[in-house]
Image (cartoon, rainbow over all chains, first blue to last red; front, top):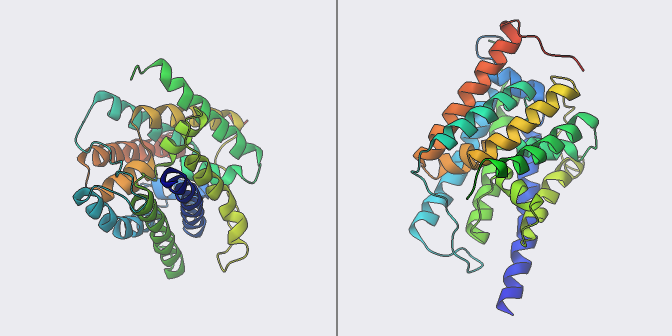
Length: 144
Length: 146
């Protein structure tokens, strides 16, 4: 009974939070690769607007994480699943660098990619298909 | 550098606040991290938990819902052809999986969680992305148009 309730709330609320997340990506123009590349083009015609996206997100989310670090359980009763904050590895740096190349080439990161794929436009579908392939490919390099 | 107008900055900050609210909600209600590369990576590996597919469905539904709100529709301008996008996508998928996070997982959630690990990852992918854009736009690096 309790497990069924948890499952229902988790699934439904995750859908709503995905929707809110996506609305934020649209409102902030993170879903426009031209805007993202303009933000990354520091030496060119730099458009700093996207710095406000990350700033706005962190200001709102940081208190929730501060709460989660000091408590054990989320509202539905399951434990907070917080990742390790301190483990620095070569894999972390290499992966972030590879991601940076792909993000710079395309101007699309995973969230906006999925939002764009909903339009069924060829560029977006090819990108997200390749992201999934690359994600699955990582199993060849990792054993954990 | 062209200073963006006030409306652009407002929409960026408000959009960011929505993203932060979604991340805060998923954490406080469900105890989960709103990291899109992780959610996608686990979902396509067909792990049992349906919530990841629900989150992805919400992302996909967002532009359609936005058309019923005062949020202006966005027409994406793709920066490259299909071949470059395929290569870029592979790098994004592989890289985010190796480093266990992307702009949302490390950039938004990790920095909000005061994580040195996520700070390093964010600095690296931001710097490398900016360097890549520099090479493509100003370094005369040839990219196929296809």
